[in-house]
Length: 125
Image (tube, rainbow, N blue to C red; front, side, top):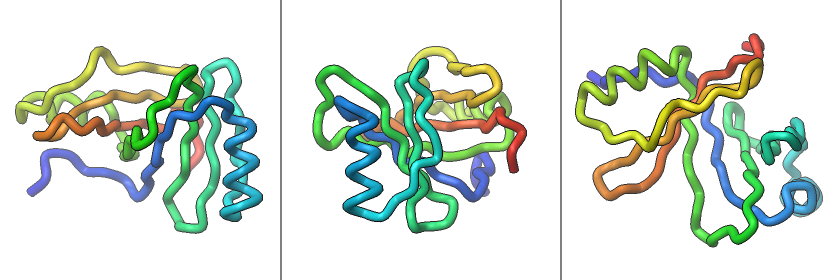
């Protein structure tokens, strides 16, 4: 039995130099659809062609290729984090909250691959 229950969403987060240019590239070349740009957080999201899967673009001055981070949606991030920490899972810092948007927490697998939990705070289902 798993330690936490995930919902039916996943965001694949990648670092890019210019979110707006990258979003346009993914829309025009791959057929994704822009959901939003959140400029104050340096974040953009695109709807992929796969139900429940979004592409998140985080702006970085010097992104490193191959820096993809799967972001798993959870209904209650505090509960999920508590359970994973109790099971010995290592987290990177505190849970980050963007009020009215999302709470996120980065954690690591056995090989130190970064993964993330996210709780939607928009009130949307």
